[in-house]
Length: 198
Image (tube, one colour):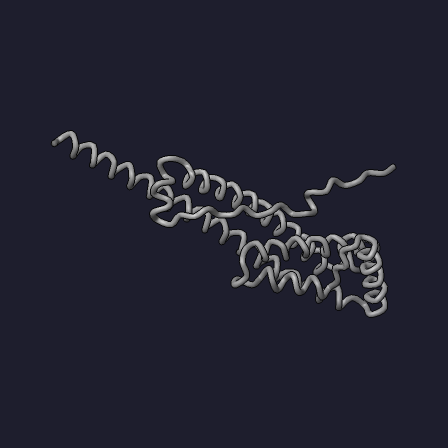
């Protein structure tokens, strides 16, 4: 009788430890997801400022600049415009959109920003603008934070999924509705190897 009670107590303690471990892992995933949201919101807030800086550029230079951006985009088949960047920023900053949509909007914004920054190199007056330079630096820094947050999120999701799918935790996971979480896809721009020509 005493042995049975001891075994039951040990099983209950193990069950509690497993349950608490799954709760901790789920909370870590939620925290990592929130961190990505914070960085995407910050980046979304910076993009309209960059767009307004480019729009405020001298009218003649602005038209030439935008013609160059659009011609460059046509050559890259992505067609990103300032309006596309603003639309992407709205999705990125929308807390109601799911994380995958916000990250996809960030990836689309990266393509457009890359084109704008590449073309801006040919416009010394725009490059010399303190506002443009600061925004470019902040956008790049924030994108690095987004990338780090994405990597961290995928790592903690992997750990969480492993925990709830491993025996004996999987027995409790089903009972307490711990469900598998999906990792974020990689940025499509990182999947293609750049072609080098001499």
